[in-house]
Image 1: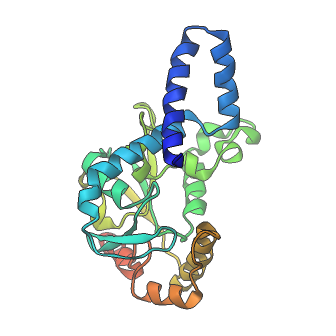
Image 2: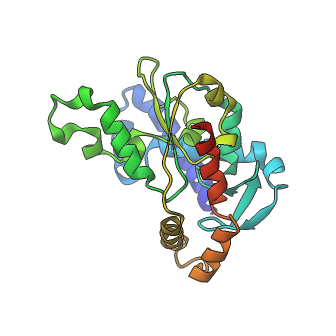
Image 3: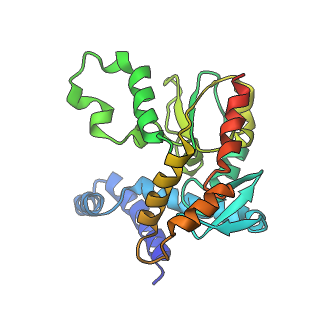
Length: 257
C-alpha cells in the first residue's frame, strides 16, 4: 500500500480514537497513549494532510514554472525570479499559500536567511534575547532551548499554512518567525506591517560547501549523489533553494539602506 495513503488512513484513525477517548473509553485511551509513544504526533499527520491539500490547490500553477534539477528534492521550480524546492514544508507550494493567507502584525519579528546560512544559530540567539526576562528566574533546565529544538521555538512562517491552529495565541507578543523567502516574495501583509526583519547572510563559499554536504546527506542512497563539480556549477548559475544567492542577499540589503 502507498506510504502516504497509510499515513492518511492512520491520521483518520487517530481522529476517531481521539473522539472515543473524550468519551472516557479506558481501552481507547490506552491505545491512544500507546500510539503517541510509538508514532509521530497527531499534529504531524494533520500537517501532512494540509500539505496534500495545498499541493492539489497549486499544482496546476507551479508545474508550469521553469524547473531545474534539485538539491534535496527532485526539482527546483522558479517562481518570481527565485528557485524553490518542489516539495517539503518549505517549498514553492507553501510559499504561494503563505502569500495568499498569512497575516502579519506590526509587532512581529522575522528572521530571514538563505538555507545553510546559520539559521538555527540565529533562531536560538533571537529567541533567547527576546525572552530573556521570561526565563531569567527559572531553572536553566526548563528553558525551551534546553528542552526543544530552536526550529520549534521559532517556526518558519512558511509552515504556518500547514497548521490547524496558529503557533501563537493572541496574547503572545512579539511573534517570532523565520523565513527563507526572498524579500520580493514575502506576503504583502509583512511588507505593509512595518514589522522588524533581521537578515543574516554567510560567506557564499561556506554556504556552497555546507549545502553540498547537507543535500547529499538528505538524498541518501535512494538518489544519485550530487558531485561537488555539479554543486559548484548549480550554485554559480544561481540554482539553489531560494537562490540565486546574490539576488537574495541584495533584496534584503536594499531595504536596509
